[in-house]
Each structure stands twice: as structure tokens, then as C-alpha cells.
Image (cartoon, rainbow, N blue to C red; front, side):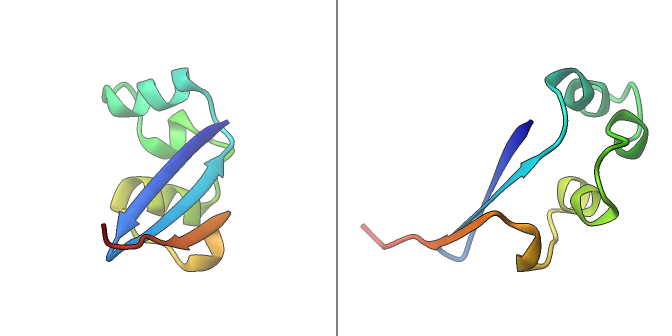
Length: 68
């Protein structure tokens, strides 16, 4: 399992994705495309990893970050 955190406009969005560090490395080191490296991910999960864009329904938690 991988935990991915996206912080944008003072909102922290967290999602846990089914995958291994080896799968992530294969994609990040350009050994495989994201879809080939992580075949268990849905299209929405892949879009989030590759493009950073996702509907809020994808995320496991969403919280507002208070200004310090």
C-alpha cells in the first residue's frame, strides 16, 4: 500500500493506493508506464499519480490546513 498526500490551497488530501514500492520505482525510474507498473490502480488513481488531478471522492481523508 502507498499513501499519497496532496496539499493544495490549504487542503490536505490523502489517499492510500494498492501498490508496492517496487511498482512505484518501476514507474518513477521510467522502466514502465504507470499503468503497466501498477495494474491494480483504477484510471482515477492513475490520473492522480500522473497528472495530480482527482475528484475529491478519490481521497480517503480531506482536511483544511489552518494558517500558522
